[in-house]
Image (tube, rainbow, N blue to C red):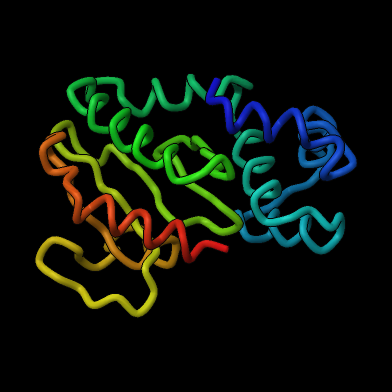
Length: 180
């Protein structure tokens, strides 16, 4: 399991008043048609912060309590992209120890106080890196967020580790710095 996610789950009782297992039991009694409804329920009714609420909801939807399984499943049939994913994670982890990695069914959200990036293996040959950089102009490389909608403002399509250059790292770092 990712160390940041494990820490988040371990800290959940202290920070939210309940364990992940207790939160899952509460959510199991409710019916939400949209993710935002569950978010609003946890945030408004229970005072859970955005990061914890998002993690609780996503881990409640999965049959496995092992987030590593979520990442493994994302890369089934896309194994050639794993070195790109691992390189991105290792770079981001150097920004600070306050980063929460939240694996979901299709992607991994990178969160500080707010989400600042998202890593998604979109095809067998391409990772889409969503980055939240409000007011940053689009370029040929730093494009529109595309399928990520409001989750990110920009998207970079990556097909090889060599494309993870200083320019890309600077964009990620800028997004991280603004996610406070």
